[in-house]
Image 1 (cartoon, rainbow, N blue to C red):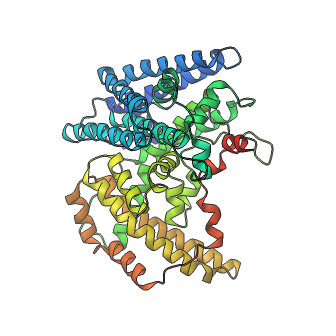
Image 2 (image 1 turned 90 degrees about the vertical axis):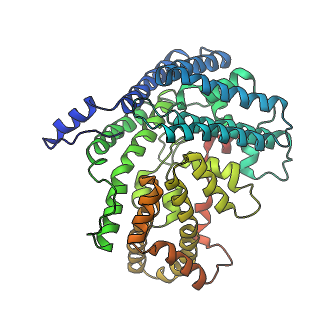
Length: 467
């Protein structure tokens, strides 16, 4: 989202002008999410598990999702239904030993066709149809992989996470339709596990009231929306030959940071919508308050204060990272990092900038991992040393991330290469030198073991089912 004209008046007048003059695409998204929020409150109040059975709740969620998709996408909603039908047919007729592979290939191909359509015919007169397809691709493939794990693979070969997520039998059609096309995550996700969705629909969790969590997230959304409308178009990303190298890096950081509130807003709003419906409870915290972070897609504080490339990535689009880990990283026998980044690039679209960003991220991630394991222990002796290390690594992380995601924002290959050329491809060359010079770490650093836990491993519902 953004605005089309620059308003140099008072800040409040500027925001008011931008909100009332949003392009069609952004207006539909915003009104669609507000409509979803209204549906969520009504769903929790009038279709609660205490008064309605699971089938009725599934049916209502599905019908509201269809209504929302018709409002946002019109006749294109038929293609959402079409992909869901194809996904369910594969579950019915495909060999369970290969159903997950067939489903992932089908859903990614289906998504890529519409990515190409969007690339060839860009417009802001309609809501980007590839966004719900991206969410749908995750849901359909997740069910197929979890169904494969539950019906073909034995407990001995499944990881603890895969065992908890596994689906033991074919989902009923109504349940499948509700999970894939329900209104809660239609426009911006987040994608949840099938088993967690079932727990929510059946009302097997005991919580008091998500009102406080919803209010906090909606207030945060208001601030993020103002920040986005105010900042996003004020720092256009382009290569300026007059800038110094330091000035270019600083501008890359400012331009990237000014665009993050758009994603913060969309994901926080989506989280609030699910919480308003009663979905997202994740147990009780140590201080006795209810946690509503089961479906949280980001941690803004950890992102903005990240002192490593991994911490930044782990707290950005969390549910998509879990999906990539489930369907790719944990299953590819060779080069899992490379395969995961390439799958992520295909999932995002066909713009060359996406592929350049993720290809750049591969050596950067490997080099950052090598440097952390080698250099970090040298700075752990005193509090002063640790503070210096944190400041330096924060600065390096922000510089490196801004450099890496620049093509993601520019989208076009020519502009991206021109920008990198002006910087001498320095952060392409430096990671390669680090990997060649620094010794390979034989054992993972003890302090980093807890970081490798996925959100699934910290999931209250899954831990409860295991106990």
